[in-house]
Picture (cartoon, rainbow, N blue to C red):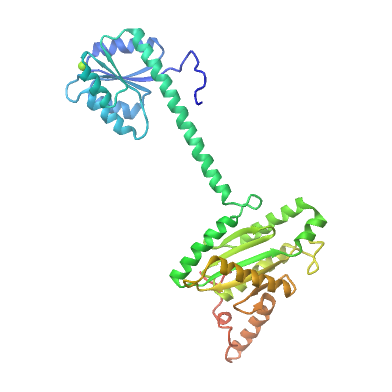
Amino acid sequence: MLQAPLPTALPPLRILVVDDQASTREVLSAQLQFAGHAVEEADSAESALQAFQRHRPDLVLLDVEMPGHDGYWVASQMRAAEAGGWTPIIFLSSLDQDHCLWQAIESGGDDYLVKPVSSTVLQAKLRAMQRLRRTQSRLIELSDELRLANEQLTRLSHEDALTGLPNRRSFDARLQQEILAAQREQQPLTLVLCDIDFFKGYNDSLGHVAGDACLQRVGSLLQGICRRPRDYPARYGGEEFALILPLTPRSGAMTFARAVLRTLALTAMPHPSSSVAPHLTLSGGITTCIPDQDTAVEGLIRRADDALYAAKSRGRNCFFSFEMQMDTREQRSASRTAADFQASGRAPLSGFGDLLSPAPPSVNGQK
Ligand SMILES: [Mg+2]
């Protein structure tokens, strides 16, 4: 399946010739160069390993008997140095015995020729090795392509194709992680579900292409507002978006929601079919908790969804928080009232403890 027809001419090789006899190296090098190959020479085990590392040859012709370390040792060292690669090694030896051939193959060699080797036999062996090497290179290429394709597939399976935001599958997994983290750290976790008001009308009046562009724009705006590394905006489905805001208390969540509405108002994307504003708006449900062992993904989503429903019943273009029992419009006026109380030195309104905290360092209310 993998083999393409082989061309008659194979590309020249870079060959390392290892032999302690200068005359043998000379003869071999001349033959190889005559056939068009490039040759490096080494006269000992040590210089062979250095040349192997330095030149990364396509093939090694390796003498067996050399002073000091022999060719078997050299082959085993070369194999160890390749770490997953494969350079063909052909032994050239004057020893014509079966156990020598056996040892050559065991030490990492691919073939074993007895000297003197005829030029024809040598060229034929080189061609065979070239073919094997081409197949190996192609396999490596295919394996790299497969790895890249798998990476892309993994990314696509976690990403919403239209907005580029994480999709519902990623969102569910991430929410589960953040619930466990918040439970461990005993920190507040906020979940926000929001959707575009009168989106069906938007599509009906402006068309689906504009509708898609609108979803992309809203996704990008939400992403821009989520500035902390662990904030996680996702496309929940249709015109719904979900945001996981770790380390975010109730008041921080409300401040965040107001920032979203303010950004949408400033962006002022025209919405001809909205009965709440001339521009595009969102309704959102917020739930905030310090999770315990009973807190589950489904429960949090249901709670945020109920809050979203409450926001819609309250006239849309607002975010409702169950824990605060108010929406973003009420919270804005409550903030003013609370600030007035604080300025006048009177006791804060009960249940507004978060609102009276010092000004949050970020839009979410915590670092
Ligand atoms: Mg020798």
